[in-house]
Length: 257
Image 1: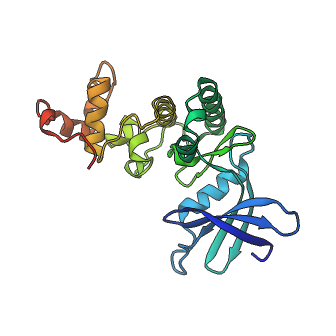
Image 2 (image 1 turned 45 degrees about the horizontal axis):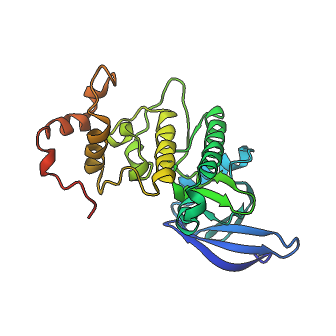
């Protein structure tokens, strides 16, 4: 750690903090993602192991680069290339620029290019959202980051028991909201579509306060699925719960608390 001089804090999370730092010998500016939740009994969190493993293998201009991994007693540090800010902050601090059609096209092209690379490598990101998309303002480059929820795609499709725990609520695909445990690349495409809509309208497309309200919001706009439009949907347990509420949606408070 002595090789780096911490300049400022740029992010917080359940894992720890992210710092902007200066590498003393090369003058390079980097991001240090400190993982503090390392316990002597439990060891390194599995999400961190996955993230390190995947980032080491990936090489694409729209995927954030892992430069080094430092292990200092109970702190694990990922040294990542430094990016100016995330897409959420970009939309907030550069609203006039973020609303321009050419900027939106460029950002979405880069997002989908990076995502296509992930999928070609048989990898699901599973947590695409503006906060996990990083921007280099001077070069107008977007990069996918935070691969802690990523998983390899199995053939045939595997059963992912933690499916209900992945993806942030407002960007979560319907199959995850309904409790589906077999899913593939469409869950990332759905999230990318939600990001696209947010760039255009400058606010989240679906902003439910709970999984249940989020599903109702989706159905109110997209229509309720059936076996013809979505084969197998009626076998998903949560879908049956939703069906039991038919005719009573008007009694739900669909607004965020």
